[in-house]
Length: 464
Image 1 (cartoon, rainbow, N blue to C red):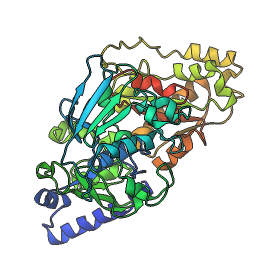
Image 2: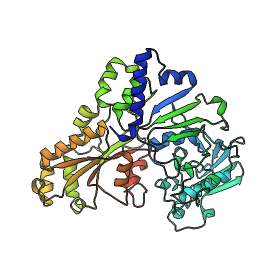
Image 3: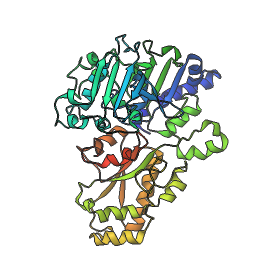
Image 4: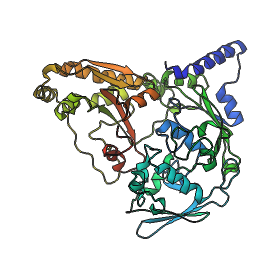
């Protein structure tokens, strides 16, 4: 069990004990249904509430409640729909997007939300000093990449124009069919200038502005309370432009890297929804409670990270040898069991205009030949191999499956190392690279192959 979850199981244990004693004590879900409060298991602890620094779905779940960009996505169709901008036009050649902000849009403290706020926010997100890992999502914009890399210092040359307080133009350097979808990423969210600079410079990555009250935002909810490792609570924002149609009064996000703890809390009536389902419970829900189980398609790929800073793994023959022993079909069928597909490449099937390659079948003989050719017959001479992952049932079982294949087919002993999610991210980043192999996963921000292949380009913020 992760230490991030200690507070939650204890509270659940108390609640269950009281239920036994009183026989009919109201659960959190029952109370939430009555009070308009949603209780959510949100995976690991939130790392950042700064939308220009935050990355990953866990942070995004909370940030999407607190902030709103120019557009959002329809939950059913995933097509762009109006957000802070009530409408927009696209020029015939697809290069100029003109957005019209809602005249009644406000920050959670009542300040008006204007185009100046968006220009400030875009300049901040692209600032070289802030070093946002996701700044490349701005790169379709004219001169955005040059500004982010410091080769252009004049922000007025970047393709953003405030025509007036409510009219914003964004100019691209070439047409991008999925551009509106990019605007859903939290790096495009506006931030409140006075709040940001209350604790430091606008591009000071270490500034503590998200930890000072009030936390000013522009989304349907505002921050009420954040108790690290216990819960994060957002409440309905009365200054939100569409507040009358926000049906929830509060959302409680609970951090937990233990899927078992989340599932137990769900069964006990303490959570409305969980981040994921333990593999050991998947078949039972399919059989006995299919109405409680939801499996949605997603553009996401799992892969193995090799630290090529380790000399042995600079050799492509060594990396290919390890890859050729992986039985993807067996992993999908016997471990994941959620309808996943064996990966034949980094980009998954289903993206319009993309045809996946046939891939390479598992070939242990060729793998052993390559490893021997590289100078490591039977794995002899290789440095100690550690596989870094996170303490979650699915990830542990994936790691064990790879460990066994590499031991049996290559003669290589692999040690599995588990680190809590925050420590895991710190270990794999470009500054530390404290791993040999590591679990890799990427979820696309938009439906285009570039969402995957751009990860491995020089200068990409997440290419660690």
